[in-house]
Length: 418
Image (cartoon, rainbow, N blue to C red):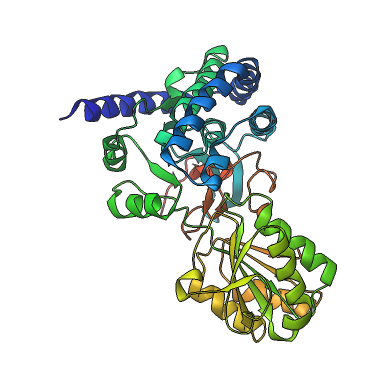
């Protein structure tokens, strides 16, 4: 057994012991830990930003893309956002012990289905250091211990943020092993996590297609899949022009490096020469490289799309665009090229919107709103570990409630089965 494997097994043992404590810890203790962590993180902001500067320098030296560097970068406003997310999660209702439903049986039994922690969660993520705080906070709120394995790009930033989380646990007299950070960038640690069925109850991968694919192929531990954000926007013939122009530009350009950024624009054939041309001109003017299919290639500033440009997550100022016959054509395109993450329809016809909602099975569907709202904080969850695109257990933004399972509490009065 390698030294790294031994270290990971020891982390697993400590996490399992911490999870036992957390499963019965008072809500007030978890709240206090997160509130104190937010205060500690802000108090140590100079150290956090200095650590982030190390990561940023290394990222630029590696030649990472602008979008990847943006995902990595921390400044005071972003750090304030992380602190606020910690406080938002702290303020949420504790899901542990909530009664989901209850009923009585003719036998005299009273049955309750109540929420219970999953146990130990492993989170494997890439370059976004805020995931350290979001994942740690949400797992703690749901009564779970967590083992965090961040990417090498955010190594120093994640360690600094983790220090604030540990300070919060210490202040609340909760086990410091409740939130552990893998202290090596060696990829062998990832392989060990994927096989630690004795200690880890579920793995949550958050990153690009390569990471998620690796986890899904290699994991023996159950996985909450977070696939690519190949997000589409369909502009229907009934769309309001001002709404469409505003929403599309925001969906693509607000932050290109997040999974909710729109990657493909679908335009009703009747709009090509009017609203469609205007929206593409808006995007080109904003600096977006528009890779367009047939019927759009005559528009100024565009480049012809290749077949590979559809069904691609760019995470950059690049967007594909295609003409479709109608909402049915748009849905057919999305079913072929999408990742079941997030899709939007811009339409004033309520029937079209209803058809779009009913006909697609993506985790998030929006009507007349930007795909950039595909975010746990915007859903009122305080934060998120990721957007789950699978269909088992959790789907869409994964917050504290989605990090619980349930058990049945059955009460009788000397009741026996005939």
